[in-house]
Structure formats: structure tokens, C-alpha cells
Amino acid sequence: MKDGEYFFSKNLKYLRSQKGTEQQELAEYLGRKSGSAVSEWEKGLRIPDVGTLDMIASFFGVKLDDLMKVDLSVDNFKDVAIETVAAHAIEDLTDDEIGEVLDFIKFQKMKRQNNDK
Image (cartoon, rainbow, N blue to C red; front, side):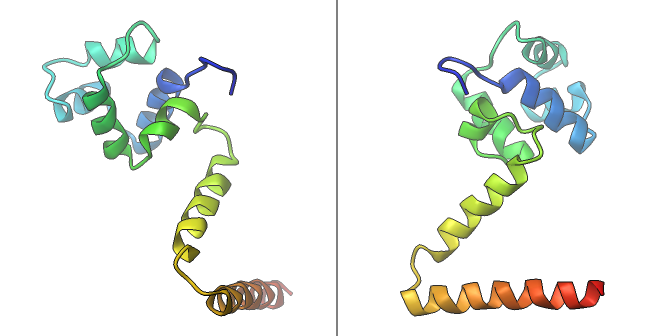
């Protein structure tokens, strides 16, 4: 991402499309009377206040920082999300426990490869 580049409008349109949510439906969730604000956000004409941005991120189940700064339509976002979850999942584990988790992952991959044969 270049400095000052934000993906909010693109992400909003993408996430709404993925979830099958109409502009009006999102607007009502946000306490607005019409979908015109959502339309303006998606066109990049306006940006909502931080509280509304937080509600939008929560609605779509993404982090606010990702909503703003990551192109969520890119295929590798799923990989980034998985890495983030994994990093948080192992942060309190001992080295031995991390080794066991990695062994289990290897086991699962091997099992899948054997099933694909």
C-alpha cells in the first residue's frame, strides 16, 4: 500500500457484494434512513466517521485497519488472515506446545495428501 492509499470504498462494495447485503440494509443497520450515504462511500465521495467505520468493520467481521488499508478482494487476504489468527493462537504457547501444533499441521497435510491419491 502506498502512503495515504486507502481501500475503504472498494472494500465496502466488495464486502457488501460478498455478503449479499443491499445498500439500504447496511444503512438501516447503521441507523441511517436511506442507502445514499453508503452509495457515496462506495463511490469514494465521502467517508464515514470513525464510529461508523468501526460498526461497518464489525458488521462484515473484519478488522478496522484491514477495512481501510488492505485490498480485501485480493485472494491472498485469506492467507494473511490465517497467518494473523495463527500468530495470536500460539503467542501464549511454550516451544514444546508450538512444536506439537506444527506436528499436527504436518499430520493433517499428509493425511489430506493420502486421501487425494
